[in-house]
Image (cartoon, rainbow, N blue to C red; front, side, top):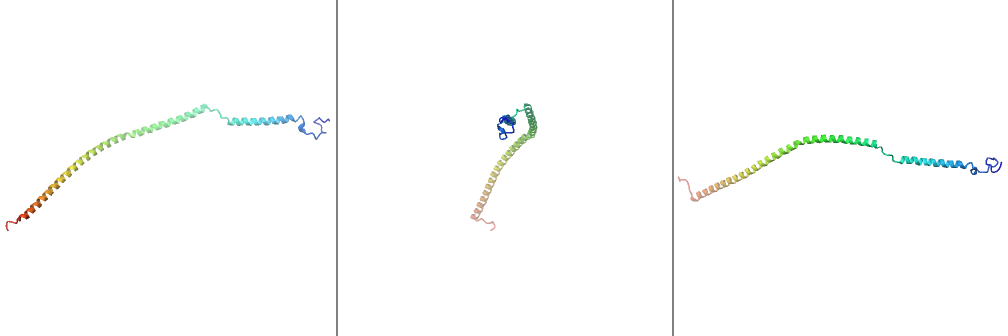
Length: 153
């Protein structure tokens, strides 16, 4: 065997790394690692990539929500009609209340007039009574000053 022959067992000290047969395997391993790295990168990009939205499912979901909104609006309208129906009596109540308030004000005005007349009458009665007392007091004074006594004596 010659020294350049790599299959020769007489040269056990020659490292196998220098042999030309090993070089393609190393390149294959490096290519395999590069391929796996590229595949992992592709997988990560596929996972991170935002998918295009599905217009049909979006429209269906939107329609479902709009239908629910329409149902709630109809329910609100029914309840609003009931509220308006019951508050119709409110106008009648306010009209009746204002009518009664007007009557109360009218009666209060009459009462004020009567009170004024009453105080005027009481003042005139008190004045008449005081004049009577004064006249009686004057009469008694005159009787004492004249010295009037009974006819018999």
